[in-house]
Length: 392
Image 1 (tube, rainbow, N blue to C red):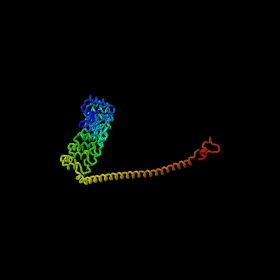
Image 2 (cartoon, helix red, strand yellow):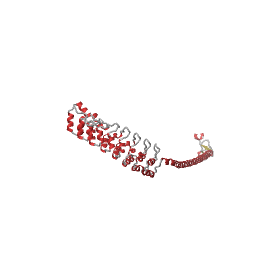
Image 3 (cartoon, rainbow, N blue to C red):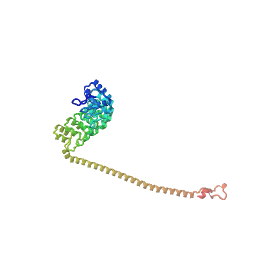
Image 4 (cartoon, rainbow, N blue to C red):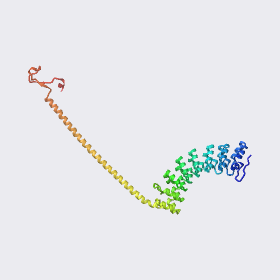
């Protein structure tokens, strides 16, 4: 049997030997145990909830971890200490890339284990800025970037808050869609970034999506409100330099960013905000009638212009219609006259032919004594005897 609960941490013998890094003695203890006893030994936790594998990983003893994992399964390896971390998670927190790699190769399922706040190893590594570990985890499973903690924060929120620009870039390169994700307070990664000190992170986020700066959280605060409240002079300057943005948002406390600055008596930030046209809520309300009058005047002018154009268009259309009507009437009259004239001409032609036919009957006179037809005499008219003529 192994000795249990020794020392002020409540370490068992295996905890103490692992902590000392004595591989030979660790193996001796393991080989002396039966199967059931070995499971109990390796799963045994001290007062901090740490098992032997956790202690070895936290100590950074890669050789010892490689040996211990031969006797662990995923169930034992994922046992959590009281801080909510398992051996893999604590290695990620410390940025121990080789340790993370060894543990994940042995137990791939460890990448999706989480602590009591639903924080994965990626969350923790991102918050600490361990870019090698972050890249490795993202290559293993990029969807890890979309896992939210109980408070709604992603790994991007955590890395942005702590100013880790390389991690921010890595996360966005794999899962760009998380850029606008909000936590349970309604805050984006930019809201978190302006609480920190890194202008580079702020610029990176704005570069990815400039409209991110105008998103308000659950209390109606933009990133400018928060940066002002935190007194982040350089970050305020980075935000207001974008001329496309309007910084007239009033939060649920009735404050603009300038109100926040004046309330905090931060004259430096107040001066920057005024320089970029940011007003207090009171001055915005006073300016509203003037703005409205100008806008109304412009609107009326636009309407008058549109009405004039429509009337002019209608007048021109009516004029064209009248011209077309006149042309149609003229064509109609000319058509009637032409029809009358055509009828008259035809009638005259018919009459002419008729009278000509009367006076010019087909046939000839008998004027040759040698060729007098039977029944005719010299000088007598001879009418054509053909049936068509007889009918005519």
